[in-house]
Length: 297
Image (tube, rainbow, N blue to C red; front, side, top):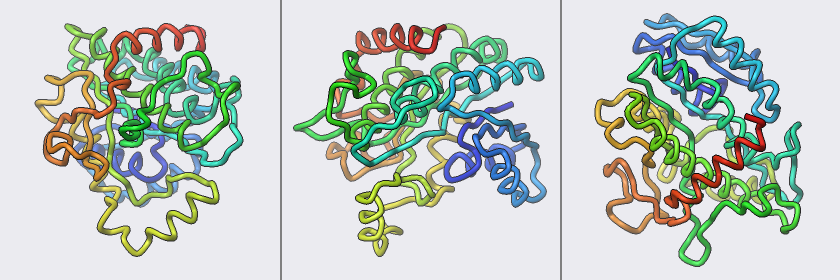
């Protein structure tokens, strides 16, 4: 039994398909149920089964409703793959229904709430896995290592940059996976943050600069990006491999040219993030404390 969020397209859809192909029952959690149903029809005759359920990670009440419906119907959960995300590359912040900056609200806070609400099902189903989609973007560069700005997490007092907001959200993802892995030691539930590589999907931002970048890089897309099937392998590794639980809380990255060190390149799972802010356990504890307050847990 698996829950995959953002399952109506891209890596989330492919992850769902592969799990179903291997005999799993997958709850495809997505904002657009009609799109999820339409895409799932193309799966054909697979070994497993699926159900499409609605959830909007820009609305914490929607997350609570989804969790309640899931728990009322199912008493076990073998794996949760938090795949939904959002990148808004403009210079004007957008906010969720609960007043949280959209990138961190969808990529992190909504999934934080869902994961916490489903922890008992995961523990009862142990051994179980939790994977949360991160991005190589969280690393930044030597001159600018991204971090969570606890004093201004909603970008009220800083000049907004959508890409920076997205990357900061992914730092939060890494910190949460690490904290949760520590917290769940001995329960049989393991965690991981996941960078799938640069997937050739419909994700990538809606701003003008992102559109220009995609046009410029289009001739090279096959050499620098992964297919959705290739990108889903990182998530599947975290959910299914025998050795992933030995590295609970770790960061698993497909690969990236942004990583200079050999240990951070493809084939060395789990990876070592170059960003010290994404490995700061004190910051991780601070983040979880703030998160509980912001989602009213």
